[in-house]
Length: 180
Image (cartoon, rainbow, N blue to C red; front, side, top):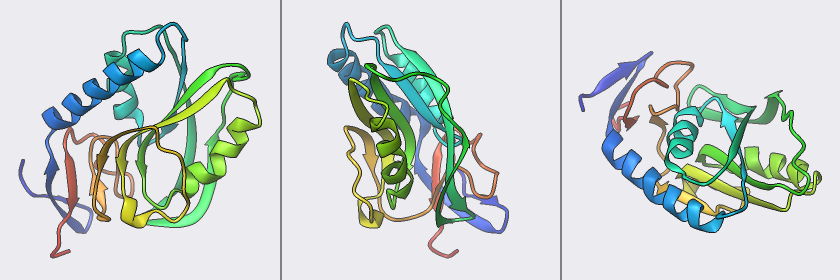
């Protein structure tokens, strides 16, 4: 994995694709066990979670459905502090077992604002699966039921995560260089 440059920033290798995929397969086994016979609805938070959601969904073997919503709170490498719903949920989740798929939880504001909206729709259960969690950055506590990686409070790129629109298509995860 080479050092890369995106826009004006330099990023260094962090997690190779093989390590990410192996962790997602382990998570899928856990979800298969927890939701056996329940046919959960996965709700992927766009844009960042699309790769995580696709790989996880391909790895679970239980009957399941998937839907997508678009929530945003980032501009550049910082959270704006405001959560915007660009595409809303178009499915009835009342009585359903729901698993939110999120790429990263850092401050926790996005899910802190969104989860109560889902709970008001009375799902049978509501859990959160996240690829990355930054415990040091967490300001708003949100329940994390499944987590692939806890990472330091550094900006990461790739595997669905972007820097001002670029880098989502990189198969690995990179982190912002210390020299940046």
